[in-house]
Image 1 (cartoon, rainbow, N blue to C red):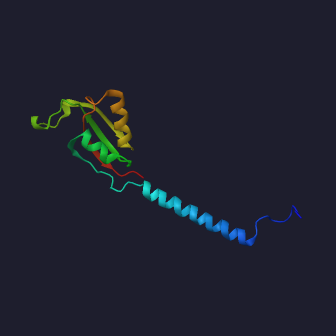
Image 2 (cartoon, rainbow, N blue to C red):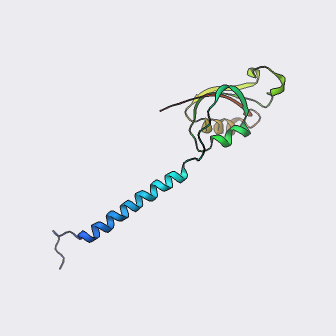
Length: 123
């Protein structure tokens, strides 16, 4: 007969539930490890100008804090100089990938063609 003051979970059931809880936490840790990027986050020295087609694949899955400058498609490495005459935007971000995606969506690929960035660690 059912007595409201008695627990419905037996000692045996508690062991099974505890085992499932461990299994669930283990699978969550495995899922997190699988979702983590396998490559280290890129670092930028602030001197090198890179095309967006080279930068964006390396940033996927990483949050890189950086001071950055976006240069348009008129910048050509062969012409010399430091490229500031082709600068479209200068900014600071905690998520360089997200910032570049937003700029590209708002202004197009011709205006967001190259990147100069100086990355830094952020807690």
